[in-house]
Amino acid sequence: MHFKNKVVWITGASSGIGKELALQLAREEAILILTATNLDALNSLKVELGNTQSHILTYNLLDIEGISNLVSQAMLLEGRIDYVIQSAGKSQRAMADQTDIVVYKKLMDLNFYAPVALSQAILPHFKKQGYGSICVISSIAGLIGFPLRSGYAASKHAIKGYLETLQCELYKTNIHVSIVYPGRINTNISKNALAGDGQQYGDTDENSEAGMPVAVCCKKIIAGLRKKQKAIYILKAERLLLWLWWYIPSLYYKIAHAKGAK
Ligand SMILES: NC(=O)c1ccc[n+]([C@@H]2O[C@H](COP(=O)([O-])OP(=O)(O)OC[C@H]3O[C@@H](n4cnc5c(N)ncnc54)[C@H](OP(=O)(O)O)[C@@H]3O)[C@@H](O)[C@H]2O)c1
Image (cartoon, rainbow, N blue to C red):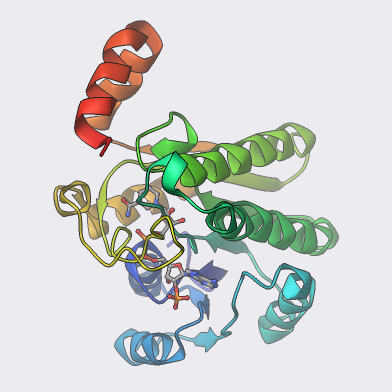
C-alpha cells in the first residue's frame, strides 16, 4: 500500500475534505498528524481513527508568524514528514462591494499566506530528507472567478501562482507539489464561509448540497497523489463552466451571474 507507514500531515483535519482524507489514509495505514483549531473535533476524529498512529497538533493558521515553529514541532513528532496536505481554508459568501477589507485580509492569510509560510518552512526539511510531497487544496475558484467569492477566488488564484512556480523550481528534485482543484463538494464549506462583515455565513447553500460526496472527492485526491499529479481536478458539471470560460466567455459570465450574483 502506497501510504503504509508514510507520515502524512493534514491541515484542516477537523472537518470536510481534511477529515475524510485522514479517514481514508488511515485505512492505508498512514501515520497521521492532524491540525486544525477545533480540539474537540480532532479528539473525536482520533477516536474514530481507532488504532491508527496519529498525533494532534492544534494550531490557528491565521497566526502566520508562528508557522515555522509549528513545522518544527510537526517534524519532531515522527522525525520526518512524507506528505503535507494543506486543506485548511475558508470560503466567502458576499458580493465584492459588500465585503469588508478585513475579510479580504483574512481570506488571503488563511488561503494564501498560511500555505505559503508552511511550504517555505517545510521545504528545507524536505531538501534535507531528499524527498517530500506538498499538496494544497485550491479550488475551481482558483481557476475562474465566481460571484460572491471575490476574496476567496483571489486567494485561491494566488496560491496556484505560488505553487506552480514551486513546481518549476523543484522540477529536478524529488519534492513533489500537487494542486487540487475541486468543484462543489458536499461539506460545511458554505456554513463556515465568511459573510461580508466577517461573521460566519452559517448557511448550507445549494451549491454545497448538490456537491460531490466528500468520500468520492478524497478518493480522487489520494489517487492523484499516488500518481504524483501536479494538478488534480475534481470536477463534474463544473468542467462545462471551465470550457465555456475558455471558449465562449460571454456565455460563462451570463451563466455565472445568473447562478451566483445576489
Ligand atoms: N467543499 C467545497 O466545495 C470545496 C471546493 C473547492 C475547494 N475547497 C477547499 O477545500 C478545503 C477544505 O474545505 P472543506 O470543504 O473541507 O471545508 P470545511 O469542512 O469548512 O473544513 C475547513 C477546515 O479548515 C480548518 N480551518 C479553518 N480555519 C482555520 C484556521 N484559522 N486554522 C486552522 N485550521 C482552520 C477547519 O478547522 P477548524 O474549524 O477546526 O479550525 C476545517 O478543518 C478548503 O481549502 C476549501 O477552500 C472546498
